[in-house]
Length: 499
Image 1 (cartoon, rainbow, N blue to C red):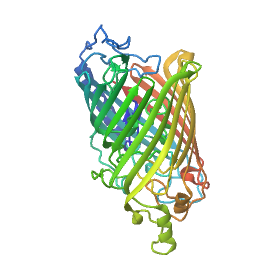
Image 2 (cartoon, rainbow, N blue to C red):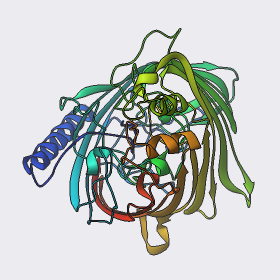
Image 3 (cartoon, one colour):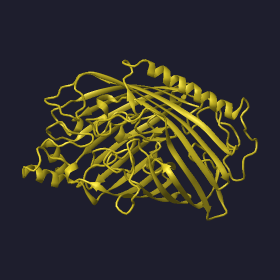
Image 4 (cartoon, rainbow, N blue to C red):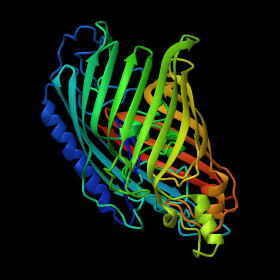
């Protein structure tokens, strides 16, 4: 499953880099083509107004060409703060490899124990247009190719958010696809206004201090829910699924990470509340969404509080809850049918029933320590009785991390970070895997249970304008919750451009 929010991304698809060296040339060619198209659209002289709209930030009306103090990525071409339209893009290439690691046994969904490398490529073109000062429309195109190590199986906290899973053993189409198509409607509830940063999903540079916002169409829920300044950007920061998202948040999405839905958000300066109703896939990890909302749907609610209450430094706390309804299987029922000799192995698919649900809660925080250093973390809990359906096989998660920009060593656009994540599953899910059951990600044929523990660190260097290069290292104990497999160390090289 795959997501993308500005520099944020979730799961793209894949082809082995060394087996298909032409893939890199194709990706770079498409990147150059999209960049030239963006340059042609904005022209040699960008449409940058010298006058900011009333109430906008001091930077409004100017063109951004370099990273700012808050870590906004530099772009290859300047983006207007005044034009009614938005055109930008990104390209992300990630090469990952791991050496051979010890494993007493392996199963159909295990991370491969022999040495392996794989490469993913994700290209995205963002477009937006302001129909009125309060109405915006967006349409984004995406192309995702490549393969993740182990075919994106064998880990709850998978190592590359650009890697897409197979669907019932079959790879997704390599063709470009429509990632987002949505409308944003702003309803003012006050006359006072606050400055807003313009980006590919938000075009207004000035917003009513108190307002309602509606979004309708095709989007990614984690574009708006469970966001974190230092733990949500897989193209310039961390790469692991359970670092960039709450692993226990089984958010509604198809295999590529997108859904159709409607969202309403209430904003009042330092407080926001958002609610979304979204479509669920027809099957676990499915590419097609179920349009029958009477039987399958997802409710998502989040409260977002921001301020400078600790040492006068900015921080945020977000409280999340979700409730998914779908044609889900039940772990205890699958185990019971196996023990009654009705199935050869526990089979979650055979127990699927309409009307079942899965729910959970999340806590997400971030806190600036200095102007360039911050800490962040998450706690996640899911009931886990019914099968993991959309994101990953994770019922409990704990995350703590730190992040810094490179201003201290005179590299203000560089960034570095380290994070620790511990994931777990409920007892019935453990027993299901121990008896040989398969999920859509996990299944070693047996299980000696232990919490999955992940340490990730990265450094991203700003090369020139919109070009970046990163090194990322992840150490994973008990991959797939299995104490007799691993540990495994994964190294990553990432090349990223913004245009």
